[in-house]
Image (tube, rainbow, N blue to C red; front, side, top):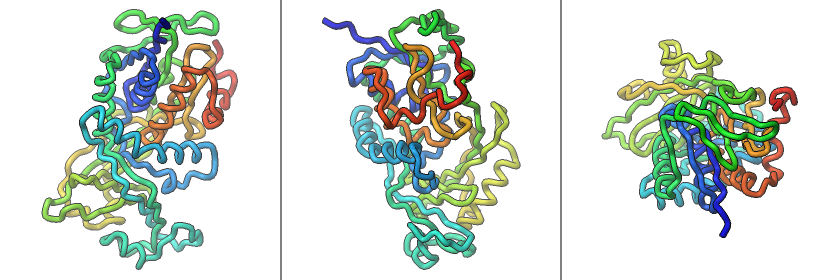
Length: 357
């Protein structure tokens, strides 16, 4: 009888949970070490699944995002069935309005066509790009669904564990030192998002994003039926009457808190695009830290250590890329073979001196 392969994942966000569930489904014994589930960027996101609205150019990154979007509906429904909870997946499509005349007519709708899709947008817009295959998910609900699914799958999740460093022996990780003692495993996965540089000298750094939400008065129902992806703003309607508005992009390290400047800039841009917002009650303000990289693409797959795999640096697309990251990283860890889609995101695309065992 073969012993189960033991795998230890550092990090408690959506990427960590997606990988853990995929590994466990393939017969591995998985433990997650999580410092604080609530601090993950997962909780601060808007949940847009928007590879087309973001106008990612043809590239391996676009291929990765489109592949993940294609997995999303089935992936979410399977998780919901396991967890017995709803993740708020909504194939609502995304409108990307513009205030400028448009020469790029692919996916373009003029003002009259936009009004047939969505009433109430600014009189200033000239039209909008329409991406019916883009979608959204309620990121906070998804985080709870993933957590519950992991519990149902009997994945061991240890919270309150701060990983202090990897203990290495030449080209292998021998153990992990934490505030709760030392952990050993057959294989290790780093999925700590914006905090990855605490453990390895890889080019992942925090990019702060401030956000807020308003609530639609119940008498109005759900007046926004599509995500609005504007210039320097996005407006994400939830089916429960909330509207999420984001997000700033600030290179300020881990500076905490919402600021008047951040809130003013978001509200000004949002009200310009969808004026009715100015009458809706404010609900909540928050902020989070995206794990950015120099090329704004994730770091996935091998590391200089033979038994350490990297899954970090997803920047704005952690929610979108969770299904494909879980699938690709689990397959890589269990087979040690890198699929073509994974190879473009290897850490070695940055300076070879970044990581040096």
